[in-house]
Amino acid sequence: MQLAILSRSPKAYSTQRLVTAAKDRGHKVHVYNTLRFAIDLSRAEPDLQYRGKPIGDIDAVIPRIGASITFYGIAVVRQFEQMDVYTPNTATGIANSRDKLRAIQILSRHDIGIPATAFVRDRNDVLPAIERVGGAPVVIKLLEGTQGIGVILAPDTKVAEAVIETLQSTRQNVLIQRFVAESMGRDIRALVVGDRVVAAMRRRALPGEFRSNVHRGGSVEAIDLPAEFEKVAVDAAQIMGLRVAGVDMLESDHGPLVMEVNSSPGLEGIEQASDLDVAGAIVDYVANQINFPELDIRQRLTVSTGYGVAELVVNEGAELVGQEINHLRDRDIAVLTLHKGATVIPNPRGNRILEADDRLLCFGKLEEMRSLVPARRRRRQRIKIQPLPDEPLGETDEG
Image (cartoon, rainbow, N blue to C red; front, side, top):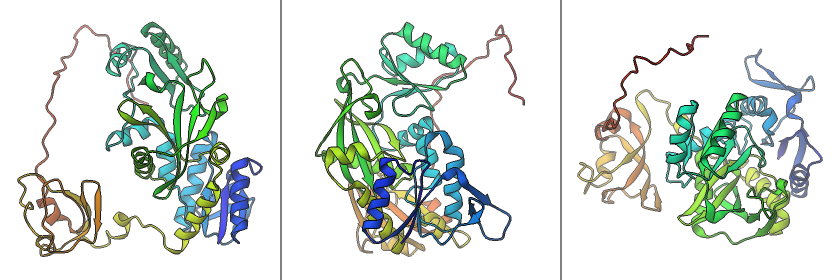
């Protein structure tokens, strides 16, 4: 395998470990400075130049994109994708994870626990937002912060207001999150590769510090991750579109709460804590994907007009309840997988009877599948907003 690693720090521990792991397995590996690529859009086929010269054949790329070069790094990864070079972390996945607000919005639409969070812009909305997340103390996070930088614990409402107002005055966007007191000063980092957690550790903050990041001086210890935490970590990474990720979780009284999904997780702390070859697991996964890659079936199967991929939920009282899967096949709908609770059944038998709450991943005629989806209920409007006639006009959004 010809492997490329995108990194501006070739001597960094994580980069060196990936290089060593690849060479130990007989692969050819090169480290490229992400910022030295030039994206060539002048030809019929997508291309990249590196230091002014065409790059050779590359089978796979492992991106290690730092926060300071997110925009350009994502563009380079996207170009590799256009060139059909495999990457475990796609450009979309990196973009999703790097934007804290976008990440929480995505996770909140799935069965993933997250700390109660609010995002507001007007100072008049700050106090109600603090109350909605559970009241002070609250955690205030910069959207662009990394490694614990820009994370502030506000002990009371007045301090929270002052901090948010100060940050917003400098054109910083901030999140307001519930402070999970029972997890004070500790969290769990799970390293996800593909569909499994290959290593996990608990991080503990220094005395008097609530941020447990290793970069803030926190200590680490290897742990056997409970099944509930492992499932949440894998689900969170895959929902974000990442196949290699560090998932940070809080240990709350109500189970795991995902704080962040990191698309370029550091390997030093977790390898030293667990004494496991995490870099090797990453390289092995990438090598296996070269021979038998995962496909985005929504893109690959939607090749005929009127056909596509969709998920159908069998609701109580729906016409599908009590029917055999063959009933769908007669309507030109193929069932790819059947989800019964936590059980996933690939390519289910045609004589299997469908029950309420079954979920079906299907490929077939879109019109037929739409006819099986019940009419969507509109959200009930709880608050009727009346204009304030005496409110002064603010600045327009033009320009």
